Amino acid sequence: MYALIEYKGKQYKAEKDALITVDKLDIEKGQNIEIDTVLLVSDEKNVSVGTPYVKGALVKAVVEDSFKDKKVIVYKHKSKKDYYKTQGHRQQYTKIRVSDIVVA
Image (tube, rainbow, N blue to C red; front, side, top):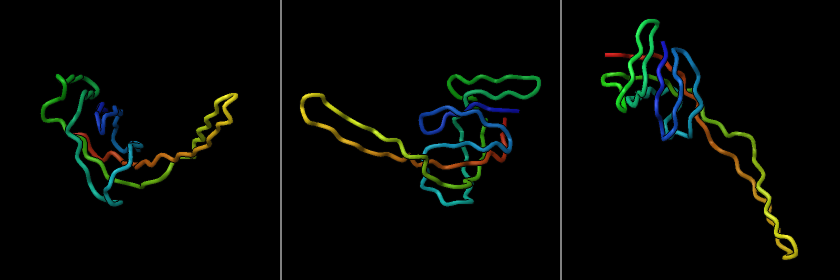
């Protein structure tokens, strides 16, 4: 069984015990979250597609860890203008583990 969910403006495929990397959450490690924006639910026999969300469907997850991704270097340069700038960025993410998919 799996579900397609929309969380914080992005779509993810959620399966039981799957580890999903989402944008940074301000929730402590070990806390439970419930995601009700389920776009599609599929078990072995049936597929339920929402318009836009499946009514009564819910994905339960547990916050595992927060971390920073590797550094991305941004380099700007304008030729003949003596302008250059180097900037780095590290995106923050949170790992969540799907504990259950509930369909009403």
